[in-house]
Image (cartoon, rainbow, N blue to C red; front, side):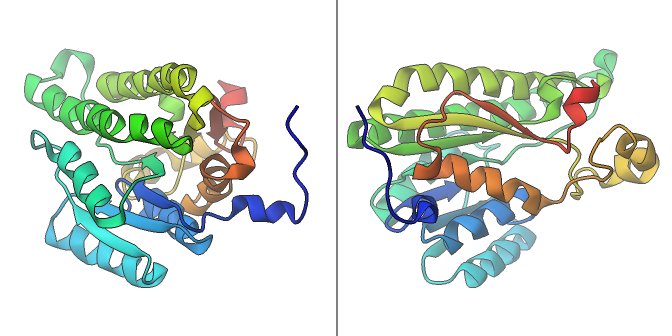
Amino acid sequence: MTSPVTGNPLDRFRLDGRTALVTGARREIGRAIAEALGAVGARVAIHHAGTAEEAADAAAVVAGIGGGAQAFAADFAHEGAAAKLAADVTATFGQVDILVLNASIEILEPVGAITRTAYDRQMAINVWSTLELLQALVPPMGARGWGRVVTIGSVQQLSPAAEMLVYAGYKALQHNWAINLARQFTRQGVTVNNLAPGLIATARNAEQIATRGEQMQARIPAGRMGRPDDLVGAALLLCSDAGSYISGANLYVDGGRTVNL
């Protein structure tokens, strides 16, 4: 029987000596999570897609975290970019203990107007890059006996918008993969969980907030839309020893929105 944890329970949230890779970490949700992981002691690899704007944003995140952080550019639209990112981060830090899969794109198209170009781009960036990172990093976590994987999902996986057939389907797939990997690797000390935000005030959501914000907010029991830092508490739980008995879970951070679906 496992012995109870003694001492300060907050110590279980510490990540000293651990290395985290957060994809899409140059702003908003990814940045908030990366900064939180750095604040509790983790070394953090800040992934961005490589444009000048993204590189500048990532540099600011690194500067804010301090010496334990480094930026890495990888455009997941390019074949093999995610696998190379995993190799580069591993070569720099020695290993990756925590993988937060936040980077994604969404292209809004009515079902009758979905193009092969848009579909292929979303599949490359959202699905294939995720698979490459999981293939490269999860088995080594299992071999070492400790690891954390957090996929950033969405309420779209449960209640898909009409214009998000491809994107919402990807989010449902990602949740399924988290369950599958939890079944395979939890016994080896690797937890895999899906963290699903609701309506968060981000640049991606700016247009729909501007046009339908009041209507959307009215469906949220909390009475407000979320902020990127609303994801931080749940992310720290799932990325640390404090969440070691949570695996295969889907956690909505949505102000209660899913209860009104």
